[in-house]
Length: 328
Image (cartoon, rainbow, N blue to C red; front, side, top):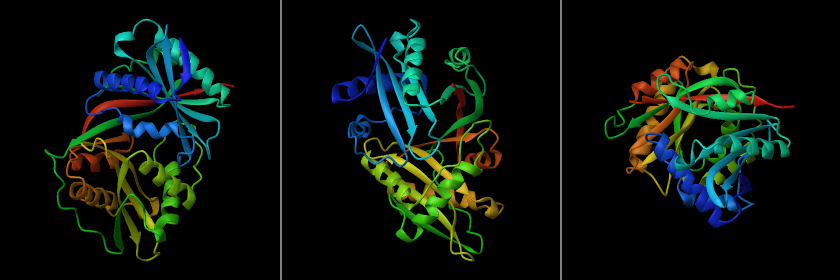
């Protein structure tokens, strides 16, 4: 197995072909990102929003058999890295997965990263993930269980949202938050790393400011992704206290992805989560009528958000288990 960085268009096409084949073979309603979304990764000056994506291609005797995607934090969690390893369906059961994982871990170690995270999908409601045995053998452990849910908007179209509780107002936008609220969004992104269920993951609080949030928005736009967002402001404080956003590819708008949703602890118990998501589904339906599917992931323990999503028509399709590997 020879693992090398994806640095040109030909390697990117080979990497993308494996991503398409594995997504089609292993998942329902979860297509690979369009090639057009990945092309900007060849630009070293691409905005990154605090995390750099690194693609690696695995070849055996010159033929591409595996694809690796690394998520490398650049602002915080500087000893961590997410690792996604995929083997083309026709090349499985030949030991390529083990060889590719070992080389990927060497690459990550060469970056000075000693903590790795892996997402392992499996059948819902229970069932072994294809990589569980291999990850156990290299010393990884499961730290968080999530469930991927999918809603078909043709079967569960957005319903009229519930009334907004007294003392709050909504703000909606597409792509870029209004300037007067960008600092609040940076604060809420920090809270995403401290307030949401993380199970047994060792993850440091993230460092966010307005510049980083604007970089995150710019990165989405550079990849051809449109952000539909709804935010709630406390009229008493004048500060944003919750938000939700959905990402849609301009190149493949049929499938959307729930990105983040948060209501600060101090403002929970007023139904704001449902209000935010219902209004945002309405915004999506109005501005992106070709979108049919929305994917969302929730920690199994996040029963409140799960109940909201099921109210909106989401149904479980897969379990995704986060694994963590620490190496000295």
